[in-house]
Length: 220
Image (tube, rainbow, N blue to C red; front, side, top):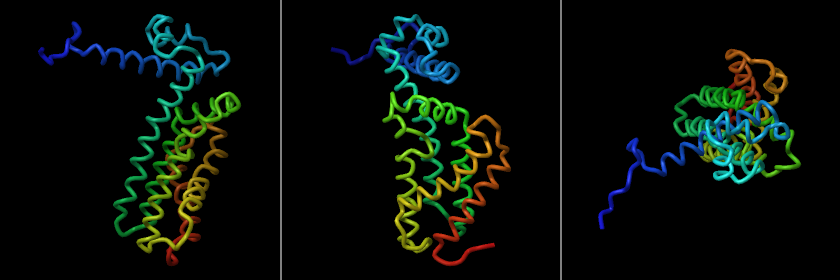
């Protein structure tokens, strides 16, 4: 029997169309939940925004809670991939530890200040008692990102570029040095933070971090 797959009239595999439709539903759900909040959002509006019938939404994601969960997870996965790519740059640090940390810190701040990231954080804080486990998927300050950053800091420690330390604690403190100021200055994402201001925050965070963790004094 031939192994040739049956294609739709558009030339796409049927499964591709289903995946695209699911992605459209999740994107629409995230947009609607961000605007309306969990309680006020309705599946009718999500279906309309996705350009599908209401039963199609239920066929893919069964109920409103499941829709919320998967919409948050999909948005978080996209942002987390961007963040992990930034952290991965620490593998090629060159000769300037400070410059590398500033570049990574700046990129983490850009991801943290992305409107999707703010929307996700506001949604999850509002619904933390209903979906407490979803806090683990938060971009930038979620445990997965902290662990990845800790791994890179541990390698810098082994290589003698930062002093012997607990890499998990160092990663948490580096992220806090970045996110604390930007949360205050942005008023929880309601005030835009200029690009140069983000760079200033990153530089200040790295300066404090280097004073605490650099293997030798590297001030100035």
